[in-house]
Amino acid sequence: MSTRLASLRLHVCVLSLLSTAAVSGCAAAAPYNPANLSAARLAQVDELCASTIGLKPGFTADDACVESLSTSAARLDRAGVREAAHRTCLDQGAGAGATLARCELDAADRAGATASATGGAAASAHPAKPFYRASSREARTREQRACAGLGYDPTSGGFASCVASLDAALYAADHPQP
Image 1 (tube, rainbow, N blue to C red):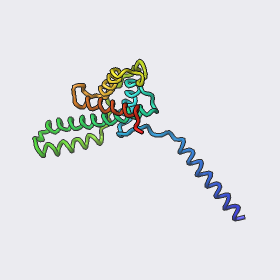
Image 2: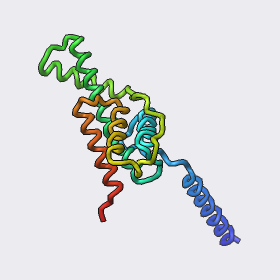
Image 3: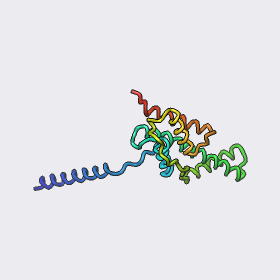
Image 4: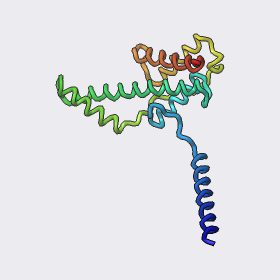
């Protein structure tokens, strides 16, 4: 009788483990967030990839778009934090040299720990046709609009870098290497 009881317990344990695995396997996966952006900033990136670029979620090109724009958004957010820290330190009379540099790093660390970047509003109008059917000129315009939608100034080097990175990521997604 004890062998039968042990066998029954083993079956119950196995069924319990299987049901736990099934439930955890059905749990919603976290959204793709390669740069660990805030929820609001990630939603903005997702919206730019869908509405401005014209990509459908779940495809390789969309993942490439999200990754590229997320990296650019994180870079822009860090630059904004550093710029605000610089102004704050100058306003506090930190002077120049090592004192100013230490003040800027401390202020940027404090701001980075508490900031939740929301970014600007993304364009909500859907492009006329999917990205893969757009001309190269239209694709470039969409890439520029997406980077502007993140908050990049079109006259800055950061804007050009954002556009070039996005263009390269979308090209690589469309032309995978064997």
